Length: 237
Image (cartoon, rainbow, N blue to C red):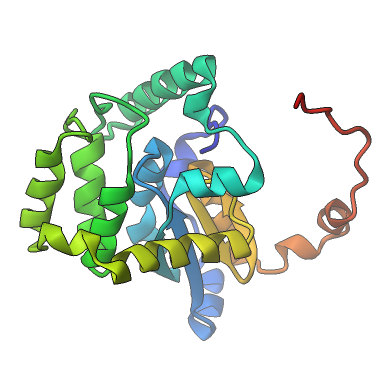
């Protein structure tokens, strides 16, 4: 998850001129989108995927955010008390500003694994993913209540018992490992042409890259690749 305090109203749309669109028609780009239902920022970003799908082929990949945190040695935003409070306050305010349906679940963080598995059982379809996001982030439901996952499974015509199938578990594990291999450290994230775009506030950055794939080839951008580390924080053992 990323802080979105600098986002502007431009977030509400992707902007291309006709020349950009003609160039994109010649090469339809694949945008791999990695997300976890635990993230309110992933929910916000999900609302923009339909617009992006006119510019790129969006492939949705549910992943376990906790596994990314473990791999990269990070704490999640909800594991830092004041950051947790800030996250919920900001998301509530942002949703109100943008007139986005939003209601924090009864408890958070929650275990997202059943919901991630449900997405795989539903073939990671856009409709299923949108339905799960809406259930978790617009209704004020209790994600720990088994009835929530049961009701969702019924709406999606999925047998709840299938969530325990080894193939479903393996699919989630493989998707998470793929994200790690692609350098994904947080959710939501896009990987486009092996370039990583992190956070709901990266949508404009994605827009800019799709309009100009040479974006990272400038001297200033290239300098970042070899930027020296001036000092390293000593982490208490």
